[in-house]
Length: 208
Image (cartoon, rainbow, N blue to C red; front, side, top):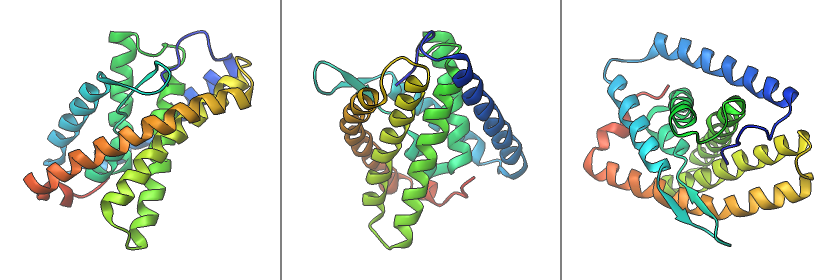
């Protein structure tokens, strides 16, 4: 899902980068205003875990592979704005250090995996919780959706840039990532189940 250089046209790069910069700026401002001292180490710990987990790929179908994204884990533990910053930091390090995703496409990658995916997951997660659905079921479905939503927007951007027809891009990206999303959901609920047993207090921290 990490878009490399040369795949997006100028207008798509400009739009996604502008939105990403604005959202990150707003997130930083609000978190600086509202964050509590005990939450700061958690930001670093979750960012480090997500970064490490994203380096591990698991096989999917047709010789392809996927990796954990981690947005719902961040949302459940810290909230949507904190997750935006975590995902942005991880993607920036991956881009500059490991060349995972192009520099010109960094704004689009942050938009897809740091904004679209987490927002989709958060909206579904919070809505399902209000319906009194089991929390882990909510997490699994929201984690799955966060992957599919991010992949779908990636397909839209590739189509707008004239790289591939929309139907082909959407079927390919959403199809493969619907399988990857199952792994995302399973990993997320496994980690949260462990945290629930070992450190339930972490789930009670104020969300930002």
